[in-house]
Length: 366
Image 1 (cartoon, one colour):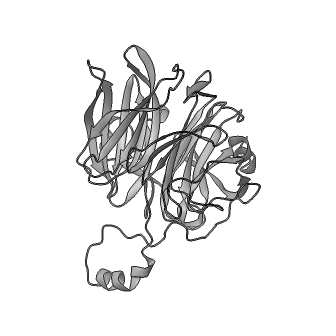
Image 2: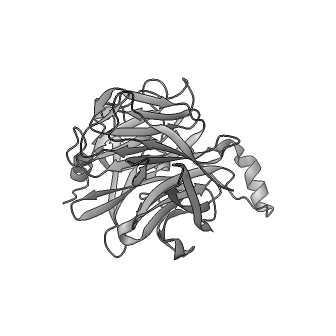
């Protein structure tokens, strides 16, 4: 999460000249109002504001749908969007943006979801969220039963404990039959875990990898098909690491911070599949645009950028987190992209829904 330090420049510059090491230098902030050039798209739905009025609270979403509608709190929905309120907990939304559930679980920052675990004989959707709540910092885990009925909903399941002082970014990955969880700390610490189910039905986590990115980092997205883990170092750029636990800290700089492509802060990341092609979407928070790379080849290829403009729903600025769903989900037959909006037109921050077809058309993706 970026924090604007512009008002501190008179203090920071003399310190830098004096040779004092500064681990975080973050001169661009959320809500700066700068909007760069990019292909125009429009949101088709949005959620209500999160948290208390006037508070910076919304942060990161995840999108999920099963082969059939699911039930949340007695409401049937073809899919769900789960978003963090980093000052309060976890919201569960329908595809119309309506709130279906709220879990007051504390200071949750980034959230992701993955299939592949069975608990008590029932396949579950596993959700994880980086948790900055004092006394329980790490990754809070949740389960959702896709076959549940009645008051079914997301429920707490346990946690991954870690030595990371301030958990920030988070993403899951399926590597073969294993569920991997990747946590990114505020200062660029990365911890990778394998998550399994214990004999008593509680979560078991095993750390399999750790390395340092270098400075403040958050965005995290995995592409198992190419053994790639993408991470954003906010004031440096977009990195590609290996995804496997044995990959160590070897990396390639996909895109440095640069005007017109990726402007600090480099923030959230997500992937989306379209036919045989896969794309990585990032948040260029400094100019409120979304760069896109095609990633199914030998190396990522830059496609272009889009901007979410004012329309029937207000536009998007300063996005932290974003998420995508690649398959049909409710009224979105080719996929859905959900982004956090830091300046909502009414009330506090919220999440905006964009039809992938509109992004694809705007960027002239075949």
